[in-house]
Amino acid sequence: MKITLLLVALPLILIGQKTYYIENTETLEKIVFESNNTYFIKSGIIYEPSKNLRFSNVENITFRSYGGGEKPVIRFSNEMNEDVILIRASHHILIENLALYGNFKNNIVHIAGHYISDEPPTTNITIKDCEVAYGFNGVRSLPYRTLCDSIFIAGCDIHHIDDDGVFIVDCNYVSIENCHIWHVNLDWNRGGPNSGDCIHLVDHCNFWSIRNNVLDRRFTSNKFCFIYGNGSYLPVSGELIGNTFYPPKDTVGGVGTCIYISPSDHVKIEGNKFLGKGYDWGGKPGAIAFVESTEVDFEQNYIYHLTNALFTDKAKQVNVSGNLMENCFGMFFNYANNLIASGNTFYNFKGWAYVSGEYVEASLIDKDTRYMKGAPTSADSVLIR
Image (tube, rainbow, N blue to C red):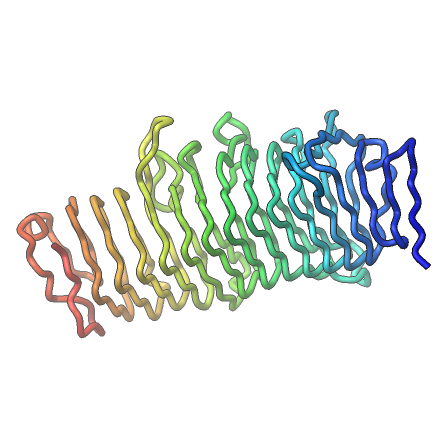
């Protein structure tokens, strides 16, 4: 038998003790998220709860919008510094098609472990098609003493963030794709103590995948579009594929580039666009990458109007192939070890390139001269025309 209960005073419909419909703030504040339930929140309405939304020790929950119109907006109406949504010791949670707003003092979505080691892990969390804005961190994950893994962020618009758009520590299988992350690191640019990035992964984050995102730092200076900080020097690998990077304005080298990856096993950087154009808010574009992985594949990327690209001598195997660099200047590749370079093309190159100890002077490039010396292990030349 299926029982449908309609509450007129609080518009909440319970169907078979599994599906809830939420249509106002009062109802939202009364909700307790329980396992195996679906919670629909009506679109086109602004909800201003006085407390955060908690998923604690639960599993298999969907929380998403329903109906036509704009995404439902969930925002704090006071000066609380609590997370807008806290997910702890839970698994298989889907947050979808919501607009989540903070007050710059709080994290918007916090995917957390716990201080007690025997708490269950937090795993398989999906944040999909959400707008995440006006917080300290957009999406934040800290494991504490319990495990966090398998975080999937897709199709989200993350913006107006004081620190990092996404900040994740010690989490395997992080996947971020088809997101637009912009206007981050606002606190530092206002003169505050915090400095952030579009995406910041820390320590044991093995098998991370960053695909088809727009990571835009044209608004703010300092730091990076993407950073993996492996302070513990753990053997991890990841990939950056099909993204569009706009580096932080007015910053070059180790203090501000599109990408910084500290020592790790292997990273693939493929099919990305690194663009130094559209800096209409003042300033100028910065650099491409600072990568310290043991093995690096840098292939089929397009670089426009940027400065230095640096890979340090920590890399033991570097493959640089099929890249197109246009209107770039001061470009250098610094490989002290094993370099394979083939099929790279430079148009309107200004300044010089530095490839495994060999300089390519601007005078040679201006004359469309083919640079034949290549790298120690390369059978192909680096083509400059």
